[in-house]
Length: 308
Ligand SMILES: Nc1ncnc2c1ncn2[C@@H]1O[C@H](COP(=O)(O)OP(=O)(O)OP(=O)(O)O)[C@@H](O)[C@H]1O
Image (cartoon, rainbow, N blue to C red; front, side, top):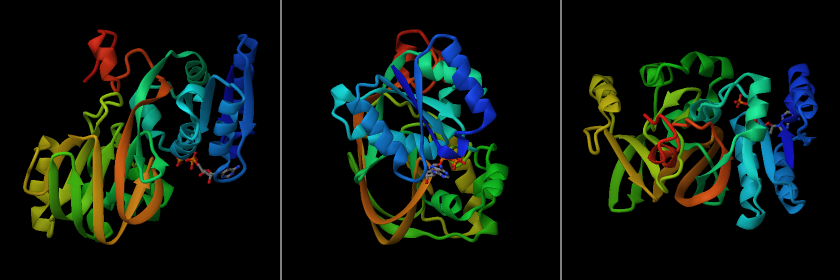
């Protein structure tokens, strides 16, 4: 039994209605609930689990998926429905990198019928996310930049780094700790990927997989002048374990204690924190993904997918 939780903004779109009717005509049992305000999607997802619904389809942007995930994670694992995604946002970073179809009818069919795979669910303090958390530069952009501009910036992998001049930028001093490491840094950008991209196409964790029990971390730090931009850009491409300005590593947890408030995003939703801790709950959710999904390492091991 599947239930579609739709962001109310999309509930009356004729294409969305057509896609739902097409599923019902094809014989699927698909009930629909629409949200009215923030918090509804999480509550509806949790409620559906208690009612014995076996698959929830999150219909909306990355924010709706994030809310549904948080609702599902409030349920005990044995009552947690599988998750399908009907991408209806402007960025759809997770759906895009999962390789889900973006055509409405095809994506609803996929969300109802694709077989589920276990994926990890990271959590920043008490807020779960499925795709990516960022802090610093990317988060400043997400919370202060109009959507159209974000769309313009999206696409080219690190185009946003080239555009930072237009905004000016801030550094956020603080102490980072993770499994096997600790350092003080003037943080420019921190990305913790379960998935690979955020901010409308920025590949901040291009090698992340969602079933390895680990966060793929990108740390850009101690970056003080425009003259250093070229080195930083090169390091963003080569992704050194420990570069002059860029570090990349994998870890099951990470903690940050800042000296000033850090803007962060969780699956694109903005927040601010002085400090936080991120942990990961391995295999906590069953997610409907395409058979050749690059984000699932287990699929490549089984020889079913393409991988990188
Ligand atoms: N009926 C509604 N009308 C307007 N906003 C809503 C409604 N229901 C929920 N919301 C808000 O929409 C947010 C989630 O938006 P979501 O990210 O799914 O869509 P989006 O903003 O269109 O997508 P994107 O961020 O990719 O552009 C929720 O946090 C909630 O605040």
